[in-house]
Image (cartoon, rainbow, N blue to C red):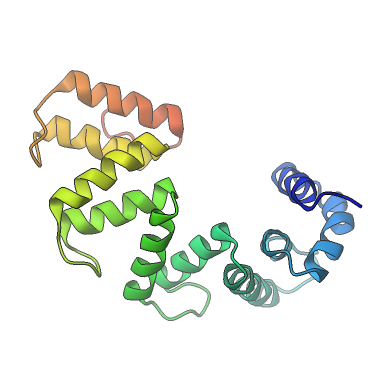
Length: 189
């Protein structure tokens, strides 16, 4: 009997590498067992002959099901659906904010950044709390959020929110952001 985690790891790698033939072999038994990550992965690729609207329907249904079963990557995607109002899902910023907050509390660095920004600027579903937001922002940067690092770089560039105007610290956080994710928007390049 195979180890479920190694099967999921193998499926994640196959998906990243575009090995859809392997996915067609290893995913069906995992999906049948309602393994959340398998459902998420399975809902993310389709045969070329399936119409686009059917692919979108299957994708959304798969993400919601995987999220309900506890897959955090799928839950994030559901939050994005609500945040942007995508795929026929009505835009619901309140619901999206609460999903992102929940994921932030579970250690998702990108969601920590989103939640921190909502608190810092008070422009989301939660009461403004700059101090709490700055603490979460710092933790998001430590946890690997490139966006959090670039936000801190901006604060050092502009001297905002009690951060000293310091170009060396701006560069430190800018470089860390690019180390975490070299596709991050860099306004200081």
